[in-house]
Amino acid sequence: MAEMITIVCTNCPLGCRVSVEREADGSFKVSGNKCQRGYNFAVEEMTDPKRVLTTSVKVVDGEIPLVSVRTFPRIPKRLIPAAMGKIRKLRVRAPVRVGDVLVKDLLGTGADLLATRTVAKAKKKE
Ligand code: SF4
Image (cartoon, rainbow, N blue to C red; front, side):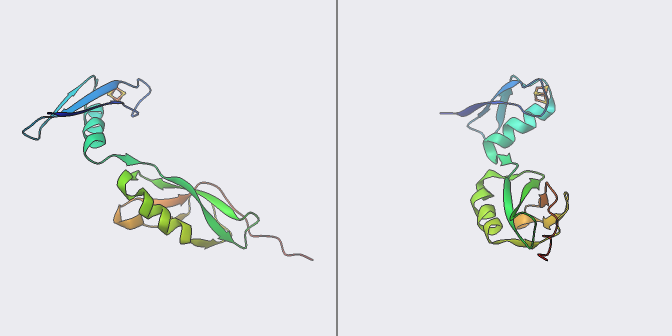
């Protein structure tokens, strides 16, 4: 029996409902997409779905203890538990600026882990 999924394409505001079916010969039958991006997205969702991972990282000597982060670009969904394991152990020293690369090429995915806010150094107590 052919494997089939239906998804909403998130590549543009139209949000097409796209169905993809894997045929017995390994090819894909895609319907509901209005463009090639929708085709590619649907096939990727069936074969190796990717997601943006958003979480936070501990900050040493910061005015707040955590900095929010995200992966850019998306990483394979199957690697999210391993990525979270690595991120939980991570400590960065303040100051951290929005856009700073905290991890380059996270788990060999080609995606970087970026800070999505700025955390200044904690003020010294007088
Ligand atoms: S299939 Fe194309 S037109 Fe439809 S939501 Fe995806 S990107 Fe937009």
